[in-house]
Image 1 (tube, rainbow, N blue to C red):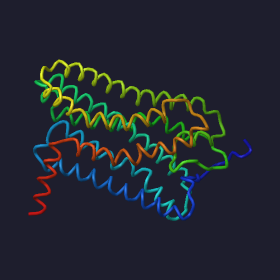
Image 2 (tube, one colour):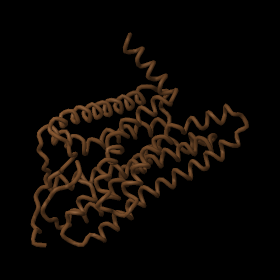
Image 3 (cartoon, rainbow, N blue to C red):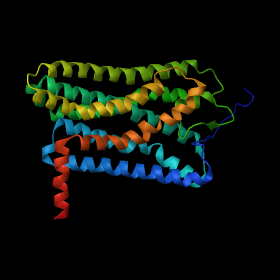
Image 4 (cartoon, rainbow, N blue to C red):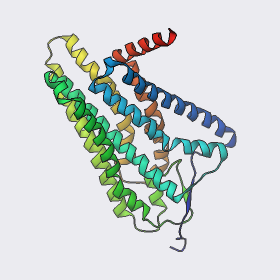
Length: 308
């Protein structure tokens, strides 16, 4: 307790790389980031201008692409600055803001993936009522609700972190303000905060994952009743892209958050966090583009317009 004081900034240790490798790492992550932002903006514009993509599924894909612009933008630009300038400090308020928005956007992605699974369930299992159930008004409310609820569900946890007393050394073993390394710096008892974090993670991640699993169980059961192999292939193909995105996102999220905190796993969290924060936002638009014939046809049409 003798080291307890009013900490005004934290030191983000980032990745332990030698000076010669910092610029190479910067170029690598910067390239991935620019391609990610460009690809997601392209998907949004494509869905907006092509009337053939004005369907509920593509409305949610556009919403996901919009989210994937902001999700990495909370943490990656700060990493750029640290790699270029070796300035590793971040203000206490800036750290708390980064924590709040990073986990809020993560919660929104969980809700959005669950909504997209429900959309595929309605499309495959109740096709005759699909456009009635997933009307434009309903789709807008679901998308808007995922954002509102995502921001609300993290408020209490963020306030708990904000009110913790922190001790020196004020070094965070991460490239952004993550939960585990922040709690490790606290001078007070943190068991209640850790329980709250675990409960919130279970509610958001496992709750949404359960909705997705139930949706796919119904989809598989309905699809297996289709008499023709062509019909079954068509039904599965409409869900394939979403299923791959779900696997990528939840395989890392469940490992990182649905388990008790352990000091020896904090460094692993730093490595695994690259995937949902940097890699997944890049892969999502590529997966939906490469595996979706309607999107590929729209891209070809857009390219022809540009050449003309």
